[in-house]
Image 1 (cartoon, rainbow, N blue to C red):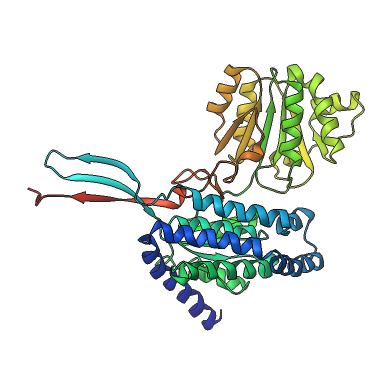
Image 2: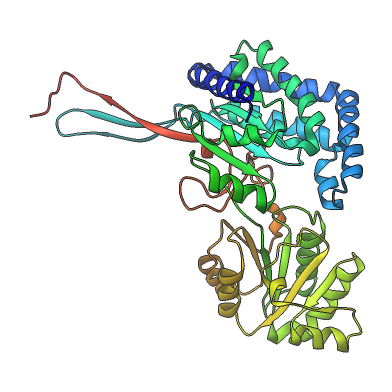
Length: 424
């Protein structure tokens, strides 16, 4: 390991910690001004940003990235416009800092207030998604946290171009320059150093494939907020509307198949599988989806003349991130719930039904970060939840769960006001 690299990363973390203390007490107007300025810079920089992105896309072709990885990497004009809009939405959100979460006065006259404050310094480690550079930087900035960004080599040029705009906007608002820093190397050794700087960094959030996230979780001395996989289910109940079931299943699977909230698993109630599966299966097949089936669903599709494949046991717990779906027939909503809790990843799961009792049982019984009734799993997203953007989706149980926005990037502290009390 290079001594120079260790010095660089340690220095970045120490400077981020100093910046975080200043940022935590900075005025809301300054943080908002930086974000509004950044949105404008993104709008005016489409040419430079797409040129940088083309360098990454050319390297992606040479390195054999999958279609899903290339899709995540690509910055189109429409995506850049949406990115700028998400920055404006974050700027328009209420400042979470200083919010009083609880308040009471003790019998001895002590006044207690539980107040929302930043976590401190957050390290974000991610792969081929340059939009994460902006999403994470602006959410941390607005919530008063300093951030250290470590993107993957796949998006290195795009990340550098976006980080330069962020630095310019921070300077324009008079905020500490070190409150957002991009690690200027893709050397894996830099990650090893970063994950052990618990004296300066308070939280690590990895975004990427399961291999990256497990490496981070297993090697970090800093608390990690994460999800490993998105094995998301749609369950079509016996009381499902046929048109709605088709629409939700197709959207959840095909709208963007390479993301963590795309459906990978389809369950159908035995009472309607014979009638609905041919319709849903044909709609999926028309979108190029390969259907991997258990014996019951295979028999139904075979009778309808719809191409399908036998599923392996591994398919029923797989995150395909591709135009592939595993299909099973279940006997009841209770079996669907048990199947999802056993084979899913506690990320995003949906029921399609007109039966309120079945929906209530599903919403209560499925132990996932987000559970949907008559809506696509693709809505498990900070932008769609009204957070402006998200720093990630957590399937952890402590601190944060689901899409993480401004409030999820905060902790709290107790402010205690007395009039001279001493403890007897």
